[in-house]
Length: 571
Image (tube, rainbow, N blue to C red; front, top):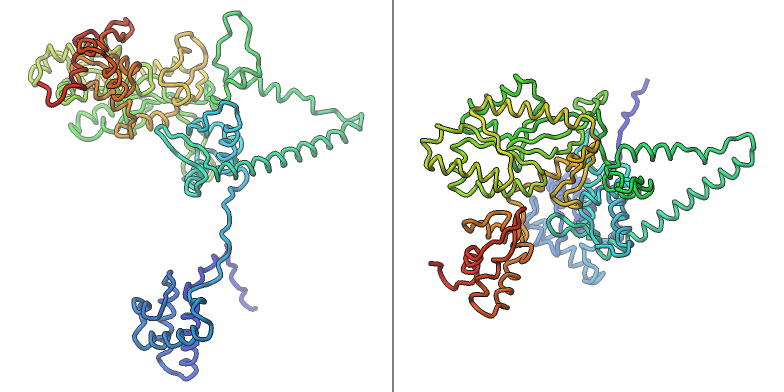
């Protein structure tokens, strides 16, 4: 029985054509001639052919081929003679390196792919009257998801790519522009033209599908014995269920519920939600808290949490030392080693842990004020300072104990943080354990809705205080990305950090100044418009800050004026 030919799976990739076809042709002829005569130089020609096939650039003459392996003076001389003869017969305009290249195909994303959905979504945004002309990442992903078959956030099983990966291709093809920080995505002129064509094709397909469905329904209605399914209330039940689960807007003061259509539209950006029972509360521990420094003390924290039965995960946190997330429960898939990654929403509680020696060092090098400022801007509403080793442990530090105690009190009273004092690592672990159980009970019957920090701002809503069964939270990925310490900063953010370097100018005071003068240029312009020196010194004195709306005062206003308007060194 003859052996069957092995089956070859896949398809062959087309080999790129040689950019020097004449040289390749002549070398092949020389090799074949030498082979017919039985000369060993055929092997030299074959090696030269292999080198030429690997070279990706066109050669103007044979002398340039000397850089290639196995191209000696003899071969180059023969090729030059053939090239000169070719020029005499065909003219120099027809160079040996020219070859027919196919027309470059225009890039058009496949229907219902990531690039297709992004282009259509941005195009529809531009057609809305009063459109801002761009979209943020989270907003774009949410709006484009229903136009794409793949997920924009979760990769397929066995792959590390999501539908969002196609955005880099759109930017490379000059169809999309990415600007600002946070990133804003908008269409180029070419992208707008392509998206318009895709939208017209999509509309044609949609109309065709509707005509086909309508004709089928008309044919169905001709038979009286067939029940008309177009009036089914299945869609209404589904809409009502989604409205019940995902509606976080309370009933208006008049007692009248909102229109279902209005409710559905208003909740569209927050369509992704975690229903009660579909998620678990988990403590996230920054990896710095478990590595480096006193290894024994840091491992003791992990052992205490394990002993207390706390569900925790060690990961990199860009701000804070501990926080809690609601992780979606995902069932493992048969045949897969690992279960799919579930969505994670960050609860509104974050903990910064400080030993007294660390607190002393952070006050000296300025980290203390910066960390509090970043905690205020991280988007979580309830920051907690966990202070270890209060009392006699501070006696051997470089700062007086009274200074450290004053810093702790200021953190609670002035900055509005909740401060929890503990004696050692075991008490810290006990506090984290109690908080984990408290939050598990607090959120057990709540519907959690994913909100975008870019769309709704840093401050969260007050659903929790009102006792509503739903609350809106940020995704962990967006929270951690927004808390990166060394990311690109705007002029406003740099100006705020400059102001906070002044003694006595807190984050609240800096924020109050920024409300009136968002950049140094606007502040200097205001100083130039003042008519006298005294007016310049008192320019900021009447600005109100904080919850009590106190004035900044003339002393601090004079200090800021001297910093930005004094010529030469400050005395």
